Image (tube, helix red, strand yellow):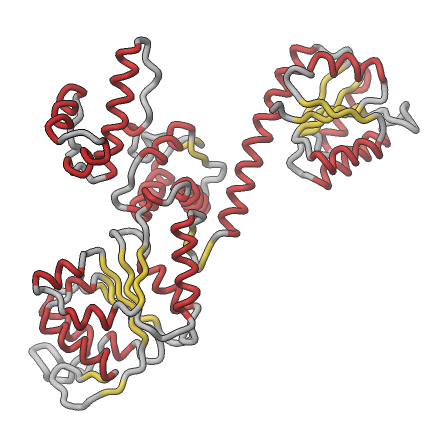
Length: 451
């Protein structure tokens, strides 16, 4: 369907001529006065308008045309309004541009010039509307700082809303970088404990010899270097929420102590004998397969079921449909504002690379790549090279059928391999070919696993 163009002109002959000249490229709406122009614009919302300033009841004056300009821009500030003016009336056209018109053309109109101008107007109008929609999407779809319009993320947000009203333990499952701590914080902020502390600890980031003290605290003199009494993270979370990230990494002796806390809501500091009552909600997270850990005897089954009263899976970014572009745009705006670089945007190849890449590091990787690109880029357009994804830009069209077929095969195979982290067996299953055939195709097409 052709884009809609509104033509506001009181001269019937000029209207007919211009409509005939432009009808092949545009859906033309015609108006001959102020009232009909405003009504047509209000109902159809065309992105571009051709406006003659001399309209009835005072065609010799510009007052009526300027009033139309003002009313149309009041309805839509993004509308591109092109003034059609006589050779001796450029001052009027410049006055209109000062009032918000996009450009002007002089009568008699050069149709080739007008076609080029209209093409540019529609292109810019489309870009601006897409950007505005993205902005509205960004503001409207933020959930406690998390972005996502995909069905998978909307389901996560719905689960968070439901569990936030309870004190049930929650276990977040998901790959590294999917936002498990942000999801835990969202539950805390929406709970009755929101005014209490949110104490977070990454169980894999602290040496095993120090983890017990970090979790449970210690008494003065409990061990060498324990010069003062110190509260642990569990005690610090009393009245609020305790978030245990990478819970699968906690050693078995501590699993027993943690299970006791979950059962009895009491702890003892390292080196202490006094039981301390703790009122804290527990949220845990892991990117490991805890059921495999239970089968292998490295993770206690009773602890798992205490932690996993509610399980919420955070999907990897590659499964979140169009969320990747939404997140990339949001990060671009945030970091550009932080470093004082206005007007930054992704070029087409960067957008294509962002969509093609499978993001093994998920949202965290996307955020880091965009941040680095904003800091290091020289121009206003961020390229695939700036985000270090040049190899993921779809190859240009080839000249022969054989080359085109090979390029398509290579792209499909690489996409399957990236999706499965370059594991041959699952990629072969997805491609519906045998593993030897996949190896053969990789050799033939020059596909190698990246270092």
